[in-house]
Image 1: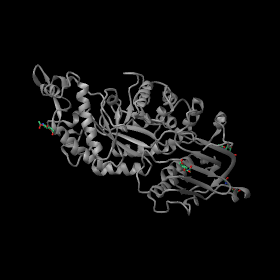
Image 2: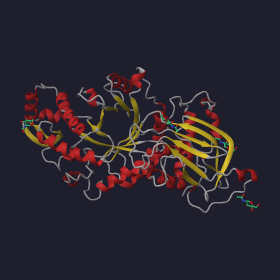
Image 3: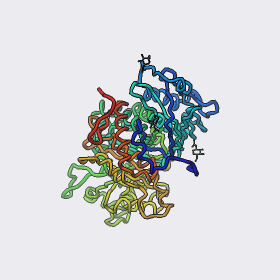
Image 4: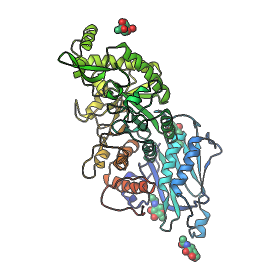
Length: 527
Ligand SMILES: *[C@@H]1O[C@H](CO)[C@@H](O)[C@H](O)[C@H]1NC(C)=O
Ligand SMILES: *[C@@H]1O[C@H](CO)[C@@H](O)[C@H](O)[C@H]1NC(C)=O
Ligand SMILES: *[C@@H]1O[C@H](CO)[C@@H](O)[C@H](O)[C@H]1NC(C)=O
Ligand SMILES: *[C@@H]1O[C@H](CO)[C@@H](O)[C@H](O)[C@H]1NC(C)=O
């Protein structure tokens, strides 16, 4: 795509110190000029190119036009700038969008093309993309290159941008079990994800602490497993709203129902599902992971996952599989008998394997693909070759870079999360550590590296709810969004700091309570 053209070399990046706007994440190729054009908020319009495959009525773009008009200009009245005659002649009143495939009612997928070209010159402002998802990314970029003069007029410089993501899976995980997140928190997060060009919302929807997902086939799960079965749940309608809100922003919803561990909240609603733990040959009254020795368990999982597969349209489901504690299984005589019958000896990894393989067969029969946490690979569960493995452990059993090497050597696709746990906070600019991670920095063949499809920033919820979610996420998650979108050569932390600081101010302007990166101030005043 680059070709022998005169793109701004990255070495000149420092020259952008005076960039009045917040370009984040940095595009693949950009060429700008000091020539600039005025935009009138009164007249400015988004239009479909006559030859675009998508035309008015395309929900994804129609709604994006409304959103970006608001992001760009807010609400009037606006001052009228005093332009020279020359400036008047080159005023810009429209941005024209052209996409080559329609797909306005589709869902974004792992395979979606998000590339776009944005051309701003004397003749026109033109946004060309393969898909509506690429057009969304281009609209975001456009909103970041428009700047305001001190008297409040809007301008955009002559610019040419050709852009595409480095990795197709750029995710953010929210945990709605340790703390319930109200619907508005999730929707607001999706907005800011789109500003950062994130494209996967990994919804860790249930866990030990609570079961807020309201199942239509098993309503007892929330009735007995949610913190509050009326106020702290996600109804079918809520889930639909999240999925559609995300779709309109080019974001996939990857839902996670983690089993066989992390399921304590499932127990009260489904008696017999969890393993009773024993102490001194008697049930102790406590429960462990899902009971893998009962046929009922698999019948239940079949029915539940049938529902989940139809509620969540994404091809992939996240099946968890992390941190299975064997102590309770080991204590239970029925499990011991089952182990004997199956010839597993004393190897509980084989029992875990048996459970997960049966579950994977169930889910693949519904036509779904799946993502699992790294333990499923580490414990040598037999998994389908198209399984995606998510790496979350930093050092054990091996360093995460080594783990990426092992997973891709075995031919599986991988996602990286280990260095990007945003819930962990330390004093100072920790975003730099997130930023400096290079996901392909492991020894391995180019074929192996091609199997790393991206990564996810994770915000686990033990110490996070809607009161502190936003400032803890933003702008820190931005470090991950740029790492996964921009070229690997984007390693200049100073340049990143300048732009991320501007971007943080831009987030404040857009109403996002993003925390400061360091000492300093934002040009605009905020209430
Ligand atoms: C945009 O144009 C203005 C005015 O000529 C100039 O000061 C600024 O540096 C330009 N910005 C970029 C990114 O080229
Ligand atoms: C535009 O020019 C008029 C007349 O010269 C002046 O009164 C007004 O303050 C100027 N407006 C701006 C925004 O500079
Ligand atoms: C996007 O990428 C596809 C596939 O590589 C290519 O055919 C298309 O021309 C690109 N479109 C733009 C606008 O860059
Ligand atoms: C569970 O199902 C298997 C296979 O269908 C069957 O062989 C076994 O007898 C069943 N076990 C129980 C306890 O029903």
